[in-house]
Image (tube, rainbow, N blue to C red; front, side, top):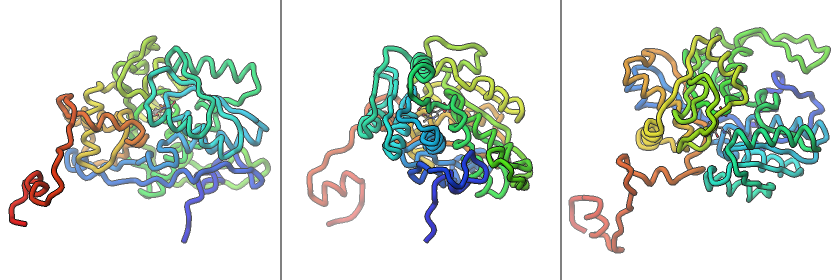
Length: 372
Ligand code: F0G
Protein backbone atom coordinates (compact mmCIF):
# COMPACT_ATOMS: atom_id res chain seq x y z
CA UNK A 1 0.00 0.00 0.00
CA UNK A 2 1.15 3.55 -0.66
CA UNK A 3 2.27 5.44 2.42
CA UNK A 4 2.25 9.25 2.45
CA UNK A 5 5.91 10.28 2.51
CA UNK A 6 5.71 13.64 4.27
CA UNK A 7 5.38 17.04 2.61
CA UNK A 8 8.98 17.38 1.42
CA UNK A 9 9.00 14.16 -0.58
CA UNK A 10 5.43 14.63 -1.81
CA UNK A 11 6.11 18.18 -3.03
CA UNK A 12 9.89 18.08 -3.62
CA UNK A 13 9.64 19.83 -6.99
CA UNK A 14 8.19 22.92 -5.29
CA UNK A 15 10.43 23.09 -2.21
CA UNK A 16 14.02 24.19 -1.51
CA UNK A 17 15.51 20.69 -1.63
CA UNK A 18 17.58 18.62 -4.03
CA UNK A 19 17.91 14.88 -4.50
CA UNK A 20 20.82 14.79 -2.07
CA UNK A 21 18.99 16.61 0.74
CA UNK A 22 18.77 14.62 3.98
CA UNK A 23 15.07 14.92 4.76
CA UNK A 24 13.97 15.16 8.41
CA UNK A 25 10.36 14.00 8.52
CA UNK A 26 7.75 12.41 10.76
CA UNK A 27 5.32 11.85 7.87
CA UNK A 28 3.52 15.20 8.27
CA UNK A 29 0.84 16.50 5.88
CA UNK A 30 -1.71 14.53 3.91
CA UNK A 31 -4.30 15.67 6.45
CA UNK A 32 -8.03 15.13 5.86
CA UNK A 33 -10.21 17.71 4.14
CA UNK A 34 -13.45 16.94 5.96
CA UNK A 35 -16.83 18.10 4.60
CA UNK A 36 -18.43 20.23 7.33
CA UNK A 37 -22.05 19.12 7.02
CA UNK A 38 -23.59 21.40 9.63
CA UNK A 39 -21.69 24.50 8.48
CA UNK A 40 -22.62 23.74 4.86
CA UNK A 41 -26.27 23.36 5.79
CA UNK A 42 -26.20 26.61 7.78
CA UNK A 43 -24.51 28.73 5.12
CA UNK A 44 -25.65 27.16 1.85
CA UNK A 45 -22.00 26.91 0.81
CA UNK A 46 -19.78 23.84 0.48
CA UNK A 47 -17.66 24.11 3.61
CA UNK A 48 -14.61 21.91 4.24
CA UNK A 49 -12.30 21.66 7.25
CA UNK A 50 -8.58 21.13 6.69
CA UNK A 51 -7.93 19.17 9.88
CA UNK A 52 -4.35 20.00 10.79
CA UNK A 53 -4.59 18.39 14.22
CA UNK A 54 -3.92 15.14 12.33
CA UNK A 55 -0.25 16.02 11.88
CA UNK A 56 2.35 14.03 13.88
CA UNK A 57 2.59 16.49 16.77
CA UNK A 58 -1.02 17.60 16.48
CA UNK A 59 -0.73 20.91 14.64
CA UNK A 60 0.01 22.49 11.24
CA UNK A 61 3.46 23.53 12.50
CA UNK A 62 4.87 20.15 11.43
CA UNK A 63 4.62 21.13 7.75
CA UNK A 64 6.99 24.01 8.30
CA UNK A 65 9.14 22.21 10.85
CA UNK A 66 10.11 19.33 8.54
CA UNK A 67 11.46 21.95 6.12
CA UNK A 68 13.09 24.15 8.80
CA UNK A 69 14.78 21.19 10.46
CA UNK A 70 15.91 19.80 7.10
CA UNK A 71 17.43 23.21 6.28
CA UNK A 72 19.04 23.40 9.73
CA UNK A 73 20.72 20.01 9.27
CA UNK A 74 21.82 21.00 5.75
CA UNK A 75 23.41 24.13 7.27
CA UNK A 76 25.23 22.00 9.83
CA UNK A 77 23.23 23.18 12.86
CA UNK A 78 23.80 21.38 16.16
CA UNK A 79 21.03 23.24 18.00
CA UNK A 80 17.79 25.03 17.16
CA UNK A 81 15.77 27.59 19.08
CA UNK A 82 12.22 28.88 18.87
CA UNK A 83 9.80 31.10 20.72
CA UNK A 84 6.35 29.61 21.02
CA UNK A 85 2.84 29.70 22.38
CA UNK A 86 3.18 25.92 22.50
CA UNK A 87 2.64 24.24 19.15
CA UNK A 88 5.83 25.40 17.46
CA UNK A 89 7.82 24.25 20.50
CA UNK A 90 6.12 20.82 20.51
CA UNK A 91 6.89 20.45 16.82
CA UNK A 92 10.47 21.76 17.03
CA UNK A 93 11.18 19.43 19.96
CA UNK A 94 9.91 16.37 18.08
CA UNK A 95 11.71 17.14 14.80
CA UNK A 96 14.95 18.03 16.61
CA UNK A 97 14.77 14.64 18.30
CA UNK A 98 14.31 12.98 14.90
CA UNK A 99 17.28 15.00 13.60
CA UNK A 100 19.40 14.18 16.63
CA UNK A 101 20.12 17.77 17.62
CA UNK A 102 19.40 19.98 20.63
CA UNK A 103 16.27 22.11 20.84
CA UNK A 104 15.76 25.15 23.06
CA UNK A 105 12.32 26.67 23.42
CA UNK A 106 11.18 29.93 24.98
CA UNK A 107 7.56 29.98 26.09
CA UNK A 108 5.51 32.59 27.98
CA UNK A 109 5.35 31.43 31.60
CA UNK A 110 1.92 30.10 32.54
CA UNK A 111 0.42 30.84 29.13
CA UNK A 112 0.81 27.60 27.25
CA UNK A 113 -1.44 24.58 27.56
CA UNK A 114 -0.43 21.49 29.54
CA UNK A 115 -0.57 19.24 26.46
CA UNK A 116 1.93 21.38 24.55
CA UNK A 117 4.22 21.81 27.55
CA UNK A 118 4.23 18.01 28.01
CA UNK A 119 5.22 17.46 24.40
CA UNK A 120 8.30 19.71 24.57
CA UNK A 121 9.37 18.07 27.83
CA UNK A 122 8.71 14.53 26.57
CA UNK A 123 10.91 15.16 23.54
CA UNK A 124 13.70 16.43 25.76
CA UNK A 125 13.74 20.09 24.75
CA UNK A 126 15.53 22.68 26.89
CA UNK A 127 12.35 24.41 27.96
CA UNK A 128 12.61 27.92 29.37
CA UNK A 129 9.48 29.59 30.75
CA UNK A 130 10.01 33.27 30.12
CA UNK A 131 8.64 36.02 32.29
CA UNK A 132 7.05 37.77 29.31
CA UNK A 133 4.64 37.17 26.43
CA UNK A 134 5.22 35.47 23.05
CA UNK A 135 6.43 38.68 21.42
CA UNK A 136 9.11 39.05 24.13
CA UNK A 137 10.10 35.40 23.64
CA UNK A 138 10.46 35.83 19.88
CA UNK A 139 12.55 38.95 20.36
CA UNK A 140 14.98 37.05 22.59
CA UNK A 141 15.02 33.96 20.32
CA UNK A 142 15.97 36.12 17.34
CA UNK A 143 18.76 37.84 19.25
CA UNK A 144 20.01 34.49 20.56
CA UNK A 145 20.19 33.05 17.02
CA UNK A 146 22.04 36.15 15.79
CA UNK A 147 24.71 36.06 18.48
CA UNK A 148 25.06 32.36 19.36
CA UNK A 149 25.45 29.10 17.41
CA UNK A 150 21.76 28.19 17.34
CA UNK A 151 19.44 28.04 14.33
CA UNK A 152 16.09 29.87 14.54
CA UNK A 153 13.07 27.75 13.51
CA UNK A 154 10.29 30.30 13.97
CA UNK A 155 8.28 31.26 10.89
CA UNK A 156 10.56 34.28 10.27
CA UNK A 157 12.74 31.49 8.87
CA UNK A 158 11.66 31.26 5.19
CA UNK A 159 11.99 27.46 5.25
CA UNK A 160 9.01 27.33 7.62
CA UNK A 161 6.82 29.21 5.16
CA UNK A 162 7.99 26.96 2.32
CA UNK A 163 6.91 23.86 4.20
CA UNK A 164 3.62 25.33 5.34
CA UNK A 165 2.58 26.38 1.83
CA UNK A 166 1.94 22.67 1.14
CA UNK A 167 -1.35 23.02 3.02
CA UNK A 168 -2.68 25.02 0.07
CA UNK A 169 -1.31 22.46 -2.40
CA UNK A 170 -3.17 19.65 -0.66
CA UNK A 171 -6.45 21.58 -0.68
CA UNK A 172 -6.21 22.18 -4.43
CA UNK A 173 -5.10 18.60 -5.12
CA UNK A 174 -8.17 17.25 -3.32
CA UNK A 175 -10.77 19.75 -4.59
CA UNK A 176 -9.39 19.86 -8.14
CA UNK A 177 -9.07 23.66 -7.97
CA UNK A 178 -8.64 26.41 -5.40
CA UNK A 179 -11.67 27.09 -3.17
CA UNK A 180 -13.50 30.41 -3.48
CA UNK A 181 -12.66 31.34 0.13
CA UNK A 182 -10.03 30.21 2.59
CA UNK A 183 -10.52 31.03 6.28
CA UNK A 184 -8.01 30.54 9.08
CA UNK A 185 -6.88 31.80 12.50
CA UNK A 186 -4.11 34.41 12.53
CA UNK A 187 -1.52 34.80 15.29
CA UNK A 188 2.08 35.39 14.28
CA UNK A 189 0.74 35.39 10.68
CA UNK A 190 3.06 32.73 9.25
CA UNK A 191 0.24 30.44 8.17
CA UNK A 192 -1.81 33.01 6.23
CA UNK A 193 1.46 34.03 4.54
CA UNK A 194 2.23 30.41 3.66
CA UNK A 195 -1.23 29.50 2.36
CA UNK A 196 -1.31 32.58 0.15
CA UNK A 197 2.16 31.75 -1.22
CA UNK A 198 1.02 28.19 -1.93
CA UNK A 199 -2.16 29.28 -3.69
CA UNK A 200 -0.25 31.81 -5.78
CA UNK A 201 2.39 29.30 -6.83
CA UNK A 202 -0.25 26.73 -7.76
CA UNK A 203 -2.08 29.23 -9.98
CA UNK A 204 0.97 30.23 -12.03
CA UNK A 205 3.63 28.43 -14.08
CA UNK A 206 6.30 27.49 -11.56
CA UNK A 207 10.00 26.83 -11.84
CA UNK A 208 11.86 25.96 -8.67
CA UNK A 209 14.52 28.63 -8.00
CA UNK A 210 16.37 26.10 -5.85
CA UNK A 211 17.03 23.71 -8.73
CA UNK A 212 19.89 25.59 -10.38
CA UNK A 213 20.19 24.84 -14.08
CA UNK A 214 16.92 22.93 -14.17
CA UNK A 215 14.65 24.67 -16.63
CA UNK A 216 11.54 22.58 -15.94
CA UNK A 217 8.51 24.83 -15.75
CA UNK A 218 5.53 23.26 -14.01
CA UNK A 219 2.15 24.30 -15.46
CA UNK A 220 -0.48 25.93 -13.19
CA UNK A 221 -2.51 23.43 -11.14
CA UNK A 222 -5.31 25.82 -10.10
CA UNK A 223 -7.31 28.17 -12.33
CA UNK A 224 -7.93 30.68 -9.55
CA UNK A 225 -6.97 31.78 -6.03
CA UNK A 226 -9.21 32.04 -2.99
CA UNK A 227 -10.23 35.13 -1.11
CA UNK A 228 -8.35 34.97 2.21
CA UNK A 229 -10.27 35.65 5.42
CA UNK A 230 -8.12 35.71 8.56
CA UNK A 231 -9.43 35.92 12.12
CA UNK A 232 -7.62 37.10 15.24
CA UNK A 233 -8.78 36.90 18.84
CA UNK A 234 -10.23 40.28 19.81
CA UNK A 235 -7.85 40.77 22.75
CA UNK A 236 -4.91 40.00 20.48
CA UNK A 237 -5.88 41.62 17.19
CA UNK A 238 -3.07 43.98 16.15
CA UNK A 239 -3.68 43.44 12.43
CA UNK A 240 -7.28 44.52 12.87
CA UNK A 241 -6.41 47.51 15.04
CA UNK A 242 -3.53 48.53 12.77
CA UNK A 243 -0.97 48.74 15.57
CA UNK A 244 0.86 46.31 17.90
CA UNK A 245 -0.89 45.33 21.12
CA UNK A 246 1.46 45.42 24.10
CA UNK A 247 -0.61 43.22 26.40
CA UNK A 248 -2.41 40.70 24.19
CA UNK A 249 -4.99 38.60 26.00
CA UNK A 250 -7.26 35.72 24.98
CA UNK A 251 -8.19 32.24 26.22
CA UNK A 252 -6.92 31.04 22.82
CA UNK A 253 -3.33 31.02 24.10
CA UNK A 254 -1.94 29.75 20.76
CA UNK A 255 -2.76 33.12 19.16
CA UNK A 256 -2.05 35.36 22.15
CA UNK A 257 0.30 37.53 20.08
CA UNK A 258 0.52 41.32 19.94
CA UNK A 259 3.06 42.00 17.21
CA UNK A 260 3.00 39.36 14.45
CA UNK A 261 6.35 38.74 12.73
CA UNK A 262 4.74 38.32 9.29
CA UNK A 263 2.65 41.49 9.61
CA UNK A 264 3.31 42.86 6.11
CA UNK A 265 2.86 39.48 4.41
CA UNK A 266 -0.50 38.99 6.16
CA UNK A 267 -1.71 42.39 4.97
CA UNK A 268 -0.48 41.54 1.45
CA UNK A 269 -2.38 38.22 1.49
CA UNK A 270 -5.50 40.06 2.60
CA UNK A 271 -5.24 42.80 0.01
CA UNK A 272 -4.00 40.81 -2.98
CA UNK A 273 -6.83 38.29 -2.47
CA UNK A 274 -9.50 40.92 -1.84
CA UNK A 275 -9.98 39.44 1.62
CA UNK A 276 -10.19 40.62 5.20
CA UNK A 277 -8.66 40.17 8.65
CA UNK A 278 -11.17 40.64 11.46
CA UNK A 279 -11.53 39.84 15.14
CA UNK A 280 -13.66 37.28 16.99
CA UNK A 281 -14.29 37.36 20.74
CA UNK A 282 -13.27 34.60 23.13
CA UNK A 283 -16.92 33.73 23.51
CA UNK A 284 -17.34 33.40 19.75
CA UNK A 285 -14.21 31.22 19.65
CA UNK A 286 -15.60 28.93 22.35
CA UNK A 287 -18.97 28.72 20.57
CA UNK A 288 -17.21 27.69 17.36
CA UNK A 289 -15.10 25.22 19.36
CA UNK A 290 -18.33 23.65 20.68
CA UNK A 291 -19.90 23.69 17.21
CA UNK A 292 -16.96 21.77 15.76
CA UNK A 293 -17.01 19.15 18.53
CA UNK A 294 -20.77 18.74 18.84
CA UNK A 295 -21.90 19.20 15.24
CA UNK A 296 -19.03 18.24 12.95
CA UNK A 297 -17.25 15.60 15.07
CA UNK A 298 -13.97 17.51 14.91
CA UNK A 299 -12.15 18.25 18.18
CA UNK A 300 -9.81 21.24 18.06
CA UNK A 301 -8.05 23.51 20.50
CA UNK A 302 -9.72 26.93 21.01
CA UNK A 303 -7.41 28.99 18.74
CA UNK A 304 -8.06 26.53 15.94
CA UNK A 305 -11.74 27.43 15.98
CA UNK A 306 -11.17 31.11 15.15
CA UNK A 307 -11.76 30.61 11.42
CA UNK A 308 -15.05 28.82 12.09
CA UNK A 309 -15.97 31.55 14.60
CA UNK A 310 -15.37 34.04 11.80
CA UNK A 311 -17.68 32.20 9.40
CA UNK A 312 -20.42 31.90 12.03
CA UNK A 313 -20.09 35.61 12.81
CA UNK A 314 -20.27 36.57 9.14
CA UNK A 315 -23.26 34.31 8.65
CA UNK A 316 -25.07 35.89 11.60
CA UNK A 317 -24.48 39.29 9.99
CA UNK A 318 -25.80 38.03 6.65
CA UNK A 319 -22.33 38.38 5.13
CA UNK A 320 -21.24 34.75 4.65
CA UNK A 321 -20.60 33.55 1.09
CA UNK A 322 -23.51 31.52 -0.34
CA UNK A 323 -23.15 28.68 -2.89
CA UNK A 324 -19.34 28.95 -2.73
CA UNK A 325 -16.58 26.52 -1.83
CA UNK A 326 -15.09 27.46 1.52
CA UNK A 327 -12.09 25.82 3.18
CA UNK A 328 -11.36 26.52 6.84
CA UNK A 329 -8.06 25.43 8.36
CA UNK A 330 -8.51 24.11 11.88
CA UNK A 331 -4.95 24.34 13.07
CA UNK A 332 -4.45 22.13 16.15
CA UNK A 333 -5.87 19.11 17.94
CA UNK A 334 -8.39 19.36 20.79
CA UNK A 335 -6.27 17.11 23.01
CA UNK A 336 -3.64 19.87 23.15
CA UNK A 337 -5.86 21.85 25.49
CA UNK A 338 -8.83 19.65 26.47
CA UNK A 339 -10.08 21.61 29.49
CA UNK A 340 -12.40 23.77 27.36
CA UNK A 341 -14.57 20.78 26.45
CA UNK A 342 -15.44 20.40 30.14
CA UNK A 343 -17.16 23.80 30.28
CA UNK A 344 -20.81 24.15 29.30
CA UNK A 345 -22.04 27.03 27.16
CA UNK A 346 -22.98 28.98 30.32
CA UNK A 347 -19.45 28.53 31.69
CA UNK A 348 -20.42 25.96 34.32
CA UNK A 349 -18.38 22.76 34.77
CA UNK A 350 -19.64 19.66 32.97
CA UNK A 351 -20.04 16.87 35.55
CA UNK A 352 -20.21 13.35 34.07
CA UNK A 353 -23.08 11.29 35.53
CA UNK A 354 -22.04 8.55 37.96
CA UNK A 355 -23.91 5.22 38.00
CA UNK A 356 -23.83 1.88 39.85
CA UNK A 357 -22.61 -1.08 37.84
CA UNK A 358 -25.96 -2.62 36.97
CA UNK A 359 -27.84 -2.52 33.71
CA UNK A 360 -31.02 -0.93 35.09
CA UNK A 361 -29.11 2.03 36.56
CA UNK A 362 -27.30 2.54 33.26
CA UNK A 363 -30.50 2.24 31.21
CA UNK A 364 -32.28 4.66 33.56
CA UNK A 365 -29.42 7.14 33.39
CA UNK A 366 -29.60 6.95 29.58
CA UNK A 367 -33.38 7.42 29.62
CA UNK A 368 -33.95 4.11 27.79
CA UNK A 369 -37.38 2.41 27.77
CA UNK A 370 -37.70 -1.36 28.29
CA UNK A 371 -37.00 -4.06 30.88
CA UNK A 372 -33.77 -5.95 31.52
N1 F0G B 1 -3.58 28.05 15.53
C1 F0G B 1 -2.75 27.41 16.37
C2 F0G B 1 -3.24 26.17 17.03
C3 F0G B 1 -1.44 27.91 16.60
O1 F0G B 1 -0.63 27.27 17.41
C4 F0G B 1 -1.05 29.10 15.94
C5 F0G B 1 0.28 29.66 16.17
C6 F0G B 1 -1.96 29.72 15.09
C7 F0G B 1 -3.21 29.17 14.90
C8 F0G B 1 -1.63 30.96 14.35
O2 F0G B 1 -0.77 30.70 13.29
O3 F0G B 1 1.06 32.19 13.97
O4 F0G B 1 0.98 31.22 11.69
O5 F0G B 1 -0.63 32.99 12.38
N2 F0G B 1 1.10 29.22 17.04
C9 F0G B 1 2.50 29.66 17.19
C10 F0G B 1 3.23 28.76 18.17
C11 F0G B 1 2.65 31.09 17.45
O6 F0G B 1 4.20 29.20 18.79
O7 F0G B 1 2.86 27.59 18.29
P1 F0G B 1 0.22 31.86 12.80
